Figure 1 (cartoon, rainbow, N blue to C red):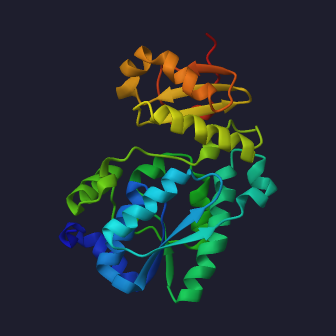
Figure 2 (cartoon, helix red, strand yellow):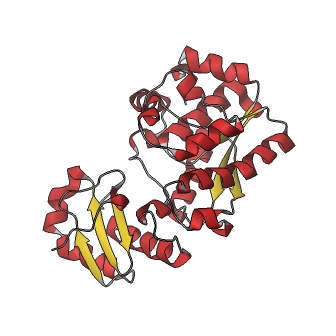
Figure 3 (cartoon, rainbow, N blue to C red):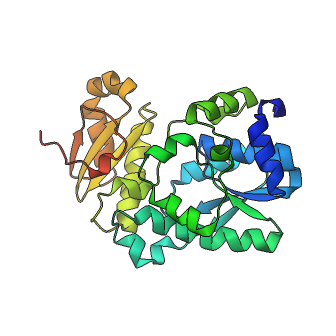
Length: 268
């Protein structure tokens, strides 16, 4: 790993923190932040990843493997969002309650281990989105070193690539609950079906997959650069998703779009 790929502004931001616990998800932003924190602060940094039913098992395993490859320490914390009615009702502020559940674990952990700050991998691109979780972060006083260093998603991907982090080009991901339309309660059974269905489609060779849940109906979104293959293998995709327990399956010809769970199901 090449520590010289840490921009001076980020190095200065991390140094000023003294010590930090990084909220880590396995995505490129938090992975690069955890890597940079370790390179700058050494043992005065720690990554913590939240484990709950909304995180696919494959994502958790891969995040832990990545931390081992990159050399930074990571600790798994259990979060209790599925015991919170405000989260389960799945209103537009669901992400706020998810972040609250996370912070209820990582801030006490940081204090117990002697870390002065908790940090998130927020980048400049995130400021243009509706992100209720950032409201929670601001209220709690979480730091955002990548944002403080004025780093965009493209900046982070380039730096992560130069550092040798294999997730430098990893597609953006969101928790399994994001596949359930706002206003439809989140249930463990729904998330289990979503996870099984997405795993089945990925085994067909597709990398960007979203299975939008609507009771027994699923709308499958494939990354736009893979749509040609999805059209050719539409029957295989539908069969894979049905194997997870869905009765009706639609492969969306428009492909993956961020926030797709809020869109209506296409009739065919």
